Length: 246
Image 1 (cartoon, rainbow, N blue to C red):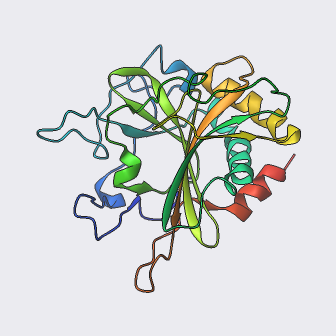
Image 2 (image 1 turned 90 degrees about the vertical axis):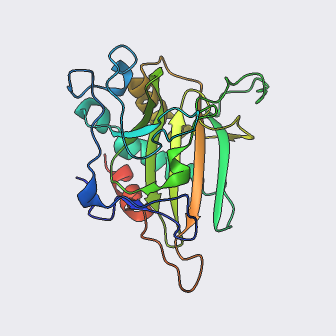
């Protein structure tokens, strides 16, 4: 179910940002050219139309539109709690306590012992020079979304959001880096990894991936006494409760 919170919450002091109220737009589901909802893994073979307000091409820009789409196929949404529970567990040590901080990392399992060169063993970032919609607005939802653009058949990544007592988080997961090359390696403990890998493999149509790239943004929800943001998504307590369910 869609969160009742405002769809976009932007920093009002930045004139380049804008707010889109829920009444003015509705996020479309990930679908093919005929408008039929499809799985994330099938998008590369049946890409749909792309057009949206967030990340939209502007006069004089050379960027390509990057938009947010809801993941609605039940074969994908069944993995929501495992994906988000794993993210909550690994996110704490990745970002600092600044007002806004982001990190790029590679998640891998405990059995990966070979040296991993972050500069040569990971592909180029998927976003390239395109405008990042996550820089322009923060979208609140309870499930999973994905980022797509018209000139690339495969999705740029899965987008998840959540909040704790102090901050909100936006995470992009994908086989390749999202915005920049990873700066660190995070070894996920076996119990988490054994639940996480089947979910990632099924979502992206891969055979048991040995690593996954994560781009994580942390935003303090009360950076100033006179400025308070609406928290994004579900709380960590809600996510971890669902994650622990059999």
